[in-house]
Each structure stands twice: as structure tokens, then as C-alpha cells.
Image (cartoon, rainbow, N blue to C red; front, side, top):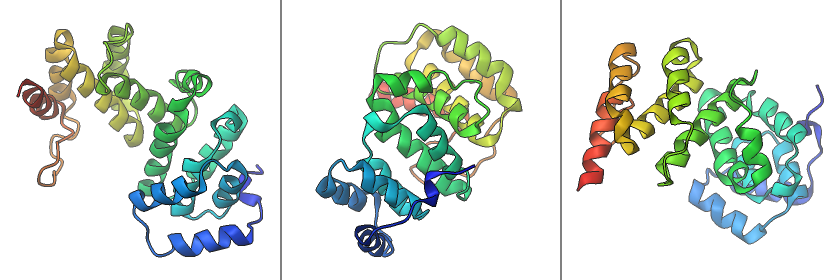
Length: 219
């Protein structure tokens, strides 16, 4: 399959690659993107470099109007080639900075529940979680989603499991009607129960995750 990774780079891209090779932070990438503004052609050239930080920058300067389903599938295919940590950062960054910005791509994300791509399935669930986490009224599909999480989460691949678990957490945090059910789900499957959690970080284990976040909301 031919992808946009086969494109040649320009001298402008080479200059940017020198900048990102120094190990820029995400905040630095945002500042760099703010200076460039929207430039889809440059974004595609940066993407073709296959360099992780260059691709993170490319996502910030893409033109959302150019993000066809075919192009998004090509981006997905390229992202699959990265190591796990980079792969998840790229797909989540793409969702937050591009796919959530347009009704067309939102509809596309909502169609990915049963996609053959595990990254697309992850984004389907992560988007559902963000709808609740961002303080919107509880969507009407909560019961349906929870039934699917309860029946499917144990059979999913880890990167999708995390997003399904995160969605269940957000449902339990923000919708009291389903709180005990989400806690019971976590207790039953035991996902992340034995995970080591860094200081000041919230555990992914549903009973603890929900309890901690609900307590914060009550303060």
C-alpha cells in the first residue's frame, strides 16, 4: 500500500527536523505550530519524514478540510508502524487536535466502533469518554455503551481496553445512576488492579479511579 510516507521532503522540512531533533516538548511544538499556522502541504511533508515529533507537529498544522476518510486511513496505517508509546500519543493527539474539530470527522469517529483498526476502535471509545469528561450532559447512549463495555472489554486488545475502561470511568464519575455498576465492572474484571501508579497520578482501576474523581468533584 502506498502511503503519504513516500513523499519527498523540502528544505523547509529539513530545517524543522533539525529543531525537533533536539527533543522539543509538546508545549514547544504548539508554539512552533502557532508560528507556522495552518499549512497542509507542509504538514504532509513533515508527516512523510516518519519522525515522531515531526508527525506530532504535522497534526497541529493540518487543514481539517483536507482530512478525507482515505487520508485518515493512511495516517492510521503510518501510525501503526510506530512503537506503542508513540503510536498511542499520535492517534490520541490526532483525535484531540483534528478529528474533534469538524462534524464530518466526528461522524467518522462515531462509525469506528467495529473498525478493523484497533487505533480507530480506541478513538471511538476515547471520544465517548471525552464527551462526558468535558462536562456535557450525559449522552443518550450511555446504557448501550456500558452493555457493550461489560461484554467486550476483556476480549479487546490493550490499547482499546484502556479507552473502554476510561469511558466506563467517566460514566461512573459523572452519572451517579451507573456508578455502582461501573465499580462492579472493575471489581469483576480486575483490569489494572495490580498496576503500579506513580505519585499524584490517578489509578486506572475502576473502583479507585471513580472514587478519587468523585471525591474531587465534591470538594
